[in-house]
Length: 322
Ligand code: ACO
Image 1: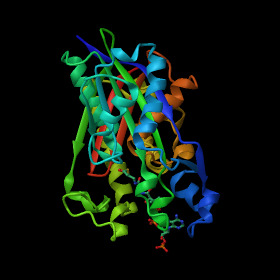
Image 2 (image 1 turned 45 degrees about the vertical axis):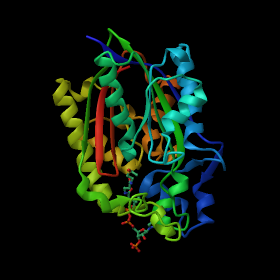
Image 3 (image 1 turned 90 degrees about the horizontal axis):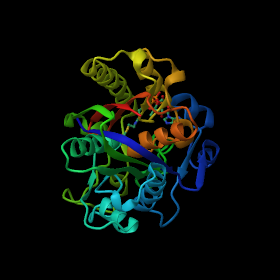
Image 4 (image 1 turned 45 degrees about the horizontal axis):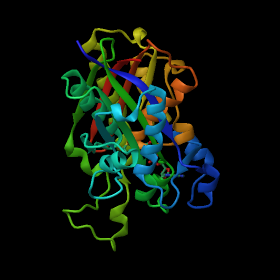
C-alpha cells in the first residue's frame, strides 16, 4: 500500500504585526474583549503588494527545504485559498511559475477555512492511486483584504499567512484517512456576498467583505467538530488516547477548547497558535503544524488529528502519522 507521508512543512507570516491594542485605535473594542471572546492577541497583515501567491511561495520554499528534496521532484501543486491573487489564473499556477516548476498539474481548492483539509484529501488520493509521488499543498490567505476594518465584529478575528506541506509517496504511513463534508444551506451565516457571476459591484463596498453571524457559527462549529472527530476515530478504530496531538483550525480559542473537551483531550495535547496568528483560514492548520514541528513538540511517528470548520459550511478532518 502506498501512503502519502509528510516529508516537510513550512510557514510564512507577513512582517507587520497588528496587536489588539492597535485595533483599539481603529474600532470600538478592547484587548480584554478580544482575548476573552477569541483568545487572539495579535495577527500579521500582508504588506501592500504582498499577495497570497507570494506568501504561499515563501512557505513552500521552507517546506521543500525541510523535505530535503529538489523542487523539480514535485509533481503536483494544490493551493487552498479563498483569497486568490486573481480570478484566474489560479494562485497555484502563479506559485508554479514563481517556483520555476514546469508543466506539472497545479490548481486551487476553495473550501474556506477547511481548504487545507480538502487539499490534503485530494493530494492523498493522487498519491495513493499513483497519480503523483511528491505533492506540494499550500494554504495561503490575505483575509485583511476582505475585512471591513470598521466592523469590530469581524476585523478583530482574522489575519494573513501561509503554510505548506510536502507529501511524498511512501510504504510507511502516512495519511490514514481524510473526511470532508459540506452543507450549503448555511451560506448566509458566513459569507462574502460579492462575486463575479452574481455581479461584483465595487460601489457596494460592504458586499466585498466578510459578513458573519458569529454566535450561530460558533455553535455549529463546536457541534460539527465534535462529530467529525468521532467519525475519524471510529473510522480508524483508534481511541483518543492514541492521538498525540490535535492540530485544529485556529478560529477561536473557545471553539478549540470546546472541541478538545468533546474529544476528551487535555489542552496540553492541542496545538494552539490562534493567540499569535488569529484566524488565517486555510493557512491555519499547516501554519500550526509547522510551528509545532519546528519547536520540537510534534515528533516523527506521532499520531496527529487535524480538524477544520469553515464557510460553506465545510468541514473536515485527517488522521496522520507524522
Ligand atoms: N469588541 C467589543 N465588543 C464587541 C466586538 C468587539 N470586537 N464584537 C462584537 N462585540 C459586541 C457585540 O456587539 C455584542 O454587543 P451587544 O450585546 O451590546 O449586542 C456583544 O459584543 C456580544 O456579541 P456576540 O456576537 O454575542 O459575542 P460572542 O460571545 O458570540 O463572541 C465571536 C463573538 C468571537 C465572533 C464568537 O461568536 C465567535 O468566535 N464565533 C465564531 C466565529 C468564527 O470562528 N468564524 C470563522 C469561521 S471559519 C471561516 O470559514 C472564516
